[in-house]
Image (cartoon, rainbow, N blue to C red; front, side):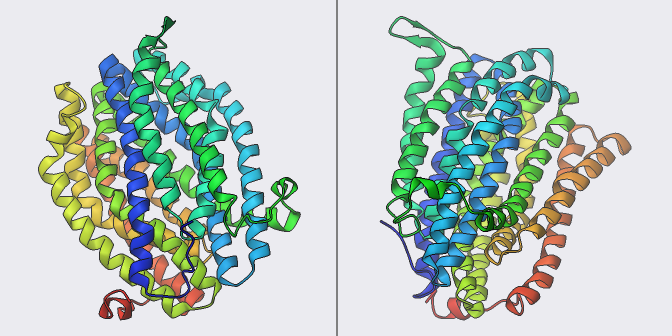
Length: 461
């Protein structure tokens, strides 16, 4: 197993050991989605647009369970750092039980509401037809997604990010082969067309969940746990909800921001939506190393905050920020120079390529802001102040995204470029708000959020 005591030992090796596998895990997750986008492009531009639209709606409900995973991970890490293994076990088992229940309830609700949700976004009839049955089928696999996320949260809290890396690598490879078989048919069975992409995902994510649960059950956080522990006590449930609901709301707000972007793009046609969907996948590939640092920072913060070692929390945050800024500058160069070429790998539609390339040019200028905002969110989770991430998200993903693109598109008449300009304004103003809140909340939680370069001066030691 890859469990780690993050309260002792040099910070640099801990950060690298957590971030490296996390980056690869997210890389394979993103490549998994790229495979879906690639095969959807074989079907039609409308299928690609439907995939992008369906993914946004699906992730809106998935985000509820994903937030539970983040909240549980912070609680488990804090309990282990404080030397309370019984509390860690209660949080881990209770979170898995709650995830399974949420998965069933939300899956059924999503399957019933898939059509109306897509219609509310103003999708073109051809796109709506491609997306509705695909999304309904995908919702049936929601329990596997949520339980898998939560099992990974249990592992991450203990410094194990390699299990998810292995699971996502296997899922990516399986998706390459299973997608065309289910789309076009095999062994005399009829193909499912666009729905075959959803069927592949449902089957593969169920297998991923089973693997991660088997790994998590052998860790100290679940050692000795029984099936009845999956029904959390009232105190455990309240703790999970207090930590998990703000994290879930943060994810919901982020997904809602994606839907707002989709709504802004709908008047410009399917090519604009498809180009954004493809370019978003490209951007995620570039952001992976930065996101992995935030994943690594959260358990480092949680365990050391639980151990009341606030100096070590500051040193970890400073080390992660220094690394994230360096990676973000390199990512900005890649997005700015090669955006059009990368978008063109996944679609031959000239209008979709132009839309995606324009978005990536704007994204190149936003990458440093994203980098530090990811770390601030991880810090808030680790010190058990997740509600402030919701505040930042409500401003950046809702208020600012409703205001700025509308201002630039309708008020100034900038057309599609106004959507990207509005996103730029929303991100950088959200960054300013996140930095202000980090200083204020850091002062209350750990006696100050000032940079501490001790770990850097010691070469990460």
